[in-house]
Amino acid sequence: MFVLQRIVWLTVGAFLQGLAMAGFLFPHAIPSGGAAGIAILNDYFFHVPLGLTLWTINFGLLLLAINKLGKLTALWTIYCVAVTSVTVDWMTALVPQPLNMTIIDVIYGAIIFGTGVGILFRFGASSGGMDILALILAKWSGKRPGTILFLINSFVLLVTSVTIGIEIILFALLCQWISTRIIDFVRTVRFQKKTKRYM
Image 1: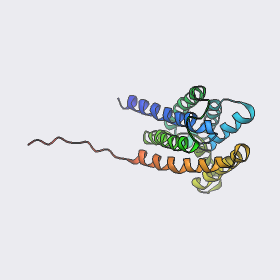
Image 2: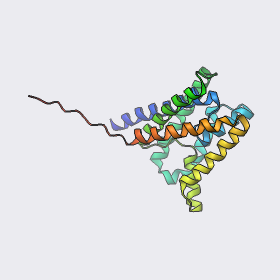
Image 3: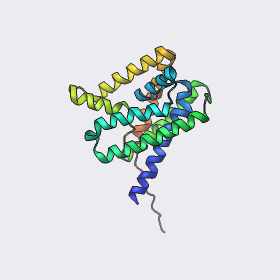
């Protein structure tokens, strides 16, 4: 029963992540992180589907980090990356143009993205992406993974902003700020069961 519940919640979380990316962020060329930034650049220059790039990057990084994550976590992460990639491809066809003004879509996208990733973390899976590369480089260099992740994402965001538009990095930073707070809340929130009181 727990495994079935876990599959359901991980599917929901991965779907929400893909929905946020393809439905609200990607139409404005706003990356949700380093891997998403590379996907946007790959689509911009070579017209490679966003979902395909995300799947390729995440799968390659997982193969490198499978020992660090553990086999079970790696398998759950591969499943989540697959669901997210399929959702991105499906939503990209449905939402070829932005739905709202950029700031509105960024806020909606960040909330949905943070909720999805928070669910994944809560149920023991990774959202993949550059956090895996940061862990590998941290082990090799002895530096903090958070610092390395910030540098990787900043570099990708800078290249994306120079290529597509400088305002992109401001919206991407706003998205990161909102989504990380949602992630922390969803991952750690505790729900208390209400007990009936009898007179």
